[in-house]
View (tube, rainbow, N blue to C red):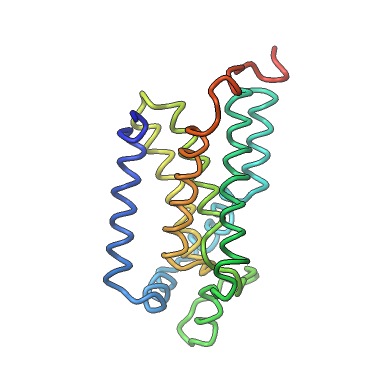
Length: 210
């Protein structure tokens, strides 16, 4: 499958391997605390907004915009890949791993923990990261449209990685949550591409065309 040899996918494998190696060499909570200590005023200001690129509302709105004005096929695939990956994430959070606590639960009592003022921290349903899954599903799908543009494909990968990093920077998820979330996002798109007949999404003309 050519998509598995794309710059996006190969770059993703490299990033994922580095993250898995980091997980093997470090304990979960000390690693998260070390990430928290990277705090800078500019990052504290940017990350709460950057992380919203993986929010379901943003992804669904982007899918609707594509449906109406850009590319009908891409729009439907964005929506379906989000729904599919979210189903896996929510089943994992609430059924398979309901007791997985978020970093804030463990770190809030540590004096050196840096909390961003007025930021809403969550404590429950940590594993896996839904924002990361959504961001990587979206980036993977869009990378198919720029398969002959490696710089653009790597840019999409970089954007998804930034969303994943924002989840750990904000202490909303551990690195392991982010890694598994990315796997869910990427694999969801490839599974959908393999399962859905090509004829279903042949029409690319948006619903509202000029």
